[in-house]
Image (cartoon, rainbow, N blue to C red; front, top):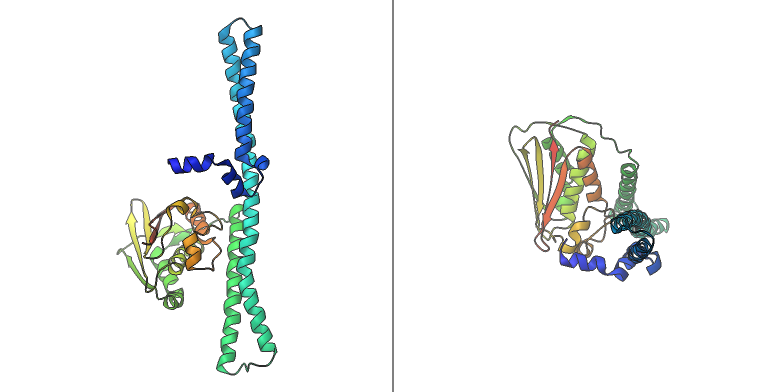
Length: 315
């Protein structure tokens, strides 16, 4: 932890604002208060011990034992409060993001349906077909969000169990690129894929692994610059396969990197570049890869793009 992060942790009002809590409900402030209580208890214990116990070593042992017990209790209580505060923050964030993500497509649906019902648009005309496409696109957006939320729910409840079998990771990547070709074209994204020759198969859940690859590619496409480039590689590495996806997009600010795999998190420069998105894609991808026994990570520089990669074991 660098000095900047240490000072951020010591800024108690800022930490409390992050959770949306008052000072006396904030875990960090409560820990500070409990620290003062522990110090006071140590001093009182020492004074009482010195008055009634002749052996100073026994006094020291008693004070140390009391201190350890109080510290353990303080840590347990504070962590419990912190988890509750984090759950409260995530609940508020969840409601805000879901409401925001559903408002736009619902508004578009209502506006389009009202226009069609007004009989000002002839469905047989080209303009009428465009409005039907708007309905389809916005319905798809809401369907995608609901699918992501259901998947997150399954992950957290431990019901996201992979059904592993022998698969070709190269074929899965090819399928994802083909299925997202229209999305790439619309966003002027030039995607290249360079797999090594004669790659072995891996033992993994094909549908879940495909979701992870799709989320990584979707993320790269959304946040590239105009006429952006996305380079994908696949190679054998140690006892597994190594997949990499590199883009020349907006990149990730240094302060946001530690949060990038968290649920609902979206960096500020990403919000400016792309307003749609639930902030669940990378969380889901990480959960899938780790559930399959692999590892996922990234490197990025703001304004110069990002590189995400993961490894999956052969068996």
